Length: 84
Image (cartoon, rainbow, N blue to C red; front, top):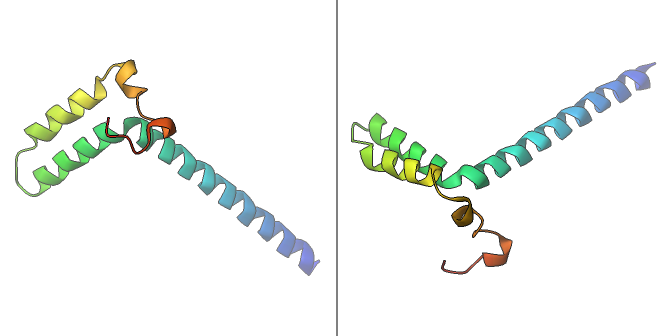
């Protein structure tokens, strides 16, 4: 009976690890898709916290969010390391 409890606890831990891994993969995917806009927004927030203006970062975030699909598809593993 003691081993049955241990097996159930191990199964719960395994499920937890799988869920955390899936969340991490999803977060990486979202960050890679919206990365430029997220970086500009975070920079704007840190400037506001520091008491500076965030207008420049807000403009960058807006430009990054409205990029065309063609510009967004330029980046990939095939173009990694190129200066485009």
